[in-house]
Length: 369
Image 1 (cartoon, rainbow, N blue to C red):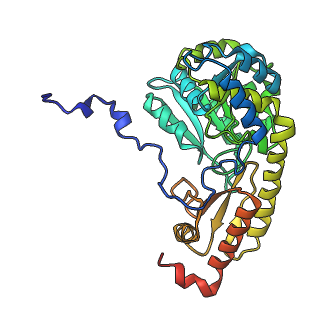
Image 2: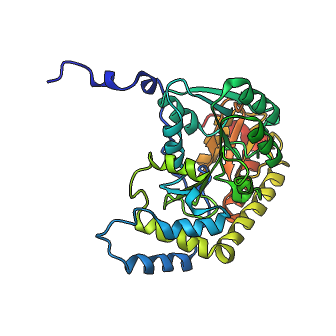
């Protein structure tokens, strides 16, 4: 029997970190994970089934998914040799950080943001630094530029639209940063489709720009785990070294190919409907006393709870069968919940529950939940 504690062989920096996790709560209405509330359309599912059924399942997928990469190139407007496909964009975030971050590498984040960036960069020994969003929970682009070019960073990681705030790093500001910063700028565009902003047009001029995208949100494929990276071809070659071989299975590859083919007629209208529902929800919640929704360019938005603790409202919504995200432990967000846009029916249920919860006659009843 080993006489030592095997945990001591885990890097101390990793042992000091908290894992990325979610509370295992199940409710009929689930609007806590920024998922697309609509399932992948049936015509796409049927075509994927036919393609998968027609090929040998005993054989590995293509080592280089050339067909998918060519279709991603046409879809994104970028060259195929500068594109990598991954098992969700999270795999590509990890691979990119693995080849850029080591002990002492300065990684600049704008917080609050997606906690996985700090977790993974720290696990690799990076020196993670941060700039805060401004008081309106928007990007302070001047502060980001100042921090980056003053020597505080080797790599800048931005989420735009940002999770969990929904704010966008504007293209003009991004271009200034790329011009002035002698380092890598990584922009996670997981929610790009809901914003109307596309940074891919900057790729031909800036070799230090890397974009990360996903099929999980706008493309309604969260269960398939497909993401992709757009970068200078030389950067893509290096990042590919950290990517696992055969990282995409045959079902995910087929689904991504068909989703691209049917995007304009079947998926774009879904995105447009989600954006309309987002704006409707923000307006309606803004009329409820004690709640202040913040503008967003994603498929989610923040709500400030000015008269009650957000944990209390979270519990009341769970009691009503609605699961949102309590982000009150994030920096700057002590008074906030995050709400993902659901279907119109789910959104109507949310509005009814919020109005009831915030009414004076019910407040004392649920405060003890």
